[in-house]
Length: 112
Length: 114
Image (cartoon, rainbow over all chains, first blue to last red; front, side, top):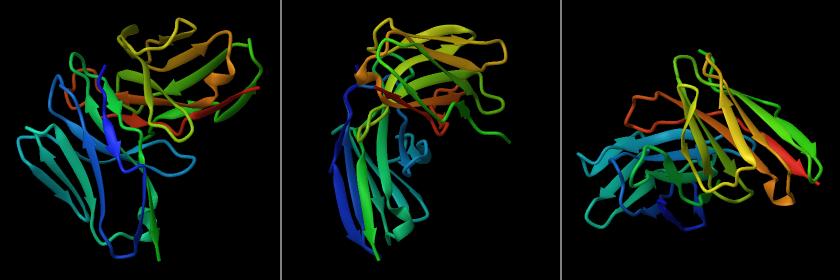
């Protein structure tokens, strides 16, 4: 079963600062690495995803960086805003099928 | 465009009881996956249904079972409830022939077992 290791467990950042969350994975059946954002009382929602034919993908203030040889990828939140306060999950496909395995989550708190 | 809908949103059961949770996938989606999310944890894969068959299963006991109907909606059943089954149960829909694995989640059913 796919193991996805996510760190840190939580982080606090000042408004306007940069939040960085890291994930490491094992072997995967195919290359697709999403990040999900979850607010309290809500289900996770897809934030951004990368297919590693590129090493970086940027959407607005959110950037995924991918290192295939190290089997690691990270989420950068630039110019963090209080509305970004949420729990973020990385995910990776398993080694032999299509299901996604999730990291344990990182709770981000942005202080105004 | 309706997203993934789940019912009920909250429920309380006692140990040994049985529960059924329901899910309607996003319009156009034919695959439903169920996840269990314990407090402070990431979602854990229970199983996935496609074409009314269980296509994949995670490391959950046989007390957890499911069903998918011809309209692609799905049910999750849990028998002989244990205290440890208390969690948020998430349904996610996707396209069965998609290799992106992109999942669209509902808001979940919060199960409390007393």
